Image 1 (cartoon, rainbow, N blue to C red):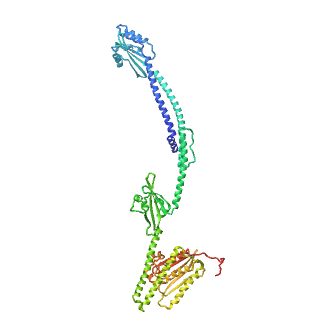
Image 2 (cartoon, one colour):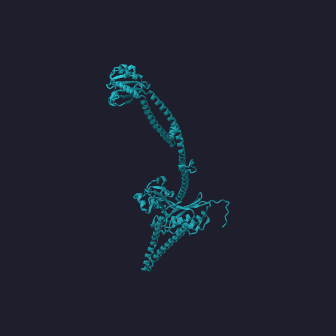
Image 3 (cartoon, rainbow, N blue to C red):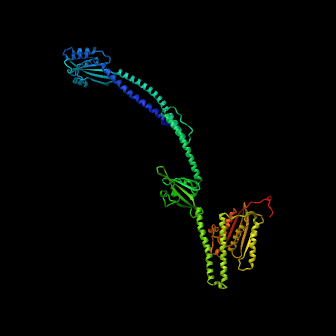
Length: 618
């Protein structure tokens, strides 16, 4: 039922049916107007003809008038004789009335008793008094025409001697009119059916090209430009069809160019290293590329149609002010966290040819590393200045003291010279460390790699520290410590620069010795984990606070600055160790708890060797 209703709705809502209905209604309206006019004229003509047909002849009227004007005793008989002798099949009743409203003669013998009585008909009285004929149609159990004519004597037209009342049946006239109307109605229906058929044919001929253009328009809307509108004629519809086909080709070409430009733009936006945000003229984001989403750490649906000021996290600035001022700003994303990112945002307006501003483009450039490098450089310069100022100030003080005469004192002078020598050595070590870091940063520090059994290599380094322990055994001033080895017996061959890796292990071991308590144990372990060899060095010192663990490999960073400086450290040892380990494609990190000591881990790439591998004997 719903399908049928929908089908009927679609049919009656189509332009084809509408045109056909309009044509049919116009045809029916025309036929009805013509039929009404024709019927009205036919009826009026028939009534006029009938009226003329029942008109009493002048000869008879004069005879009746003469009899009414005479005073003879036989006038009534003569009047009845004239009326009865008058032959007209259409007339059903004739009444002759004198000017005194007295009935003098009747044609119907059933009404003969009315002769001599006064007539009560107002129309008859009006005709007698005015002398004007009255014609009217009444419905007295049938359609009748009443014709009342004045009777004038020969003495003058204004000398009314009476009136003649004629009643005639119009049944035959109206029957003829009905028959003609029925015939006209049938003809009208036939003409309407023929007109409806012609209307459907004509409307179909008009709407078929339009329907095809509609289908083509829907295909174009769906992106299909392959079909063409069929041309049926060279009239306006044919010209419209040709124009539509041309338009389809041009739209397809324009769409291809637009798609190509959009793909090119999407490719450029998606491969840009900068983030791009495009807004409408109200400042709401309409386009965003993936890099901008990565920078802002949001999803596309959380950004589209949102004010750009809100997207960038600017609470005190409106989007309109941000766009209109076109100022370059710096935006910080996730401040004071590990994922903190610093973005440089620049704005430019999108203008039409007319100068109307339709939107803006915001370009986000990641300046996090640049900012960090600048901060690191500033911090580095500050740290270097601070680290050099301390020994230089100490040197200046001791040299001034010596210059003022302390060199003559045999007890003080040697101590002053010893301190001066220690501070000078410390500055030399610092400068050498800085040069090493500079060479690593510039990539000019060459690596002399060779395959070494790491187990033997670490044992060799630890043997040196064991010799130092034996040498310092008899010196009560030296710190006592023990080195515990957990290296295993497996040969672990790794490719390293032995000098640089020895520098790393020496640095960590020296730190472990410095910060371990007297009599402490330093544990050195060597383990294999998948494709890596991990060397760990643990001490029993004071430990490193959790908040400082991520910064101990920064240059000049010290957990306890006073103690580190007092022990002669430069603050660059762990930074150098990190650079060397990373140059070996490894990783270095630390784990510590305050009061429980620290453990430093060095992870280096390792590929297990099989027995079939051939080695040259060294």
